[in-house]
Image (cartoon, rainbow, N blue to C red; front, top):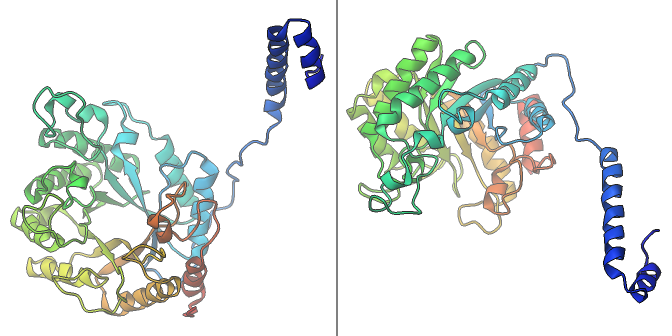
Length: 398
């Protein structure tokens, strides 16, 4: 019997409505079981010959967010589009919390996929390392959020106690050892001058330097040729004692005072244009693209003129309602001009990495307007203009 309004009426009249519903639900369940295997399977990665990035702009680099992709084909497609853009380098995040979910037990599967697909596309990977697994964080009773024993409190994934620094250094060594000869640059942590990135604690340049020191020594013991980058600092003007963070220039000065110099081979930097064009003058009280020049001056003053800088996040945003955004045309113009400026004025900069290629899913807010591809892989206009510049040297403006 196939259920219909008429059969429902007849059964109801017969006084057996529950039997009708039972039969109908049974048929629906059978139908689901029958048709489920007939649904279209998700795409699979397609084996291709090894590729080479064709580019006229070696500075061009993209920051990707591949670690959170569920489908492997999306990793491959993202990296294909990086190559087709003309970018020979990516920065990718490899979270400790993902790769060592249980102490001493590593899960390298997603990282292996990313590295293998990057190699297949001829793309170099700069690995950013961070995020703390639950087993390496204190219990809720021991956090700084409230009195000892207070329930309902916890720590964030950025919270790492000093006594756990050796555990992170051990992870760094394991990562460097596994990808020796395949990944030659690692970044230790991210924006430690922000309280959010330091586990919602007051930031501490001296503590970060100790984390950097232990990580550097562990990385070099695992692979002497690996380049260790000190963490990029968030561009901010926060003053000493602020609950939000500390000015990046002040933080870097204090890192040197704490003895950081021997423990990094290069410095990662974040520098955003916000609402100003790339040629706008830098200043200690201003946040703009050229703030990297003030960071460089500090490095030179401390005898680190020979160390390169990797700008691992940069860019402009074109969200129509964000106060730090520009128009879509200005974003394109400023981005292209930024590469011209860096190429001519910053010989110490190795890469200039745009934030961000795409997100696995839309954020439905202003971060979406940093992307070059939509989540369903549709190129934004800025992708096309940057591609023409990187692949063919065409410097055209909208």
